[in-house]
Length: 179
Image 1 (cartoon, rainbow, N blue to C red):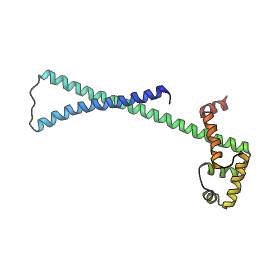
Image 2 (image 1 turned 90 degrees about the horizontal axis):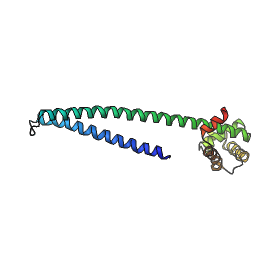
Image 3 (image 1 turned 120 degrees about the horizontal axis):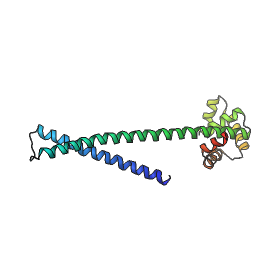
Image 4 (image 1 turned 180 degrees about the vertical axis):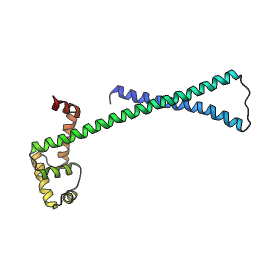
């Protein structure tokens, strides 16, 4: 994680803690005042001007806490949307990468389906059931896929795609296609 993103995360957590602390202190002030008056417990009197200043300060603290809380929620929602967009782009890039590799290897449509299911982690029996074929047919197709891809098995097949994604970001790949 880049240094500035980590600092922003820590700063955001500190801001949230400060907001909660300010709101808690202000709420305690108002709640304790009400509870004490309900039970007829009176503290030693303080000048009315001082009490007014305390109430104004507590009110301002609650309003600031509300405003800062709304800001933090807005920021969190914006960051969540950015993360969702990056995930969507990465998912699209992965599907494009699959299609490119499948074409490069000359896989038939049936082999492409089997390869996709294999990459998703499905067993031979599950793939056969989904494709309404025998397990023997799926095994023959997976062997053809591994031979055409130049790998020895499913883990190596999956590692080819992981390596491709690690070498080049989805955004860089998308920019190359546009340019």
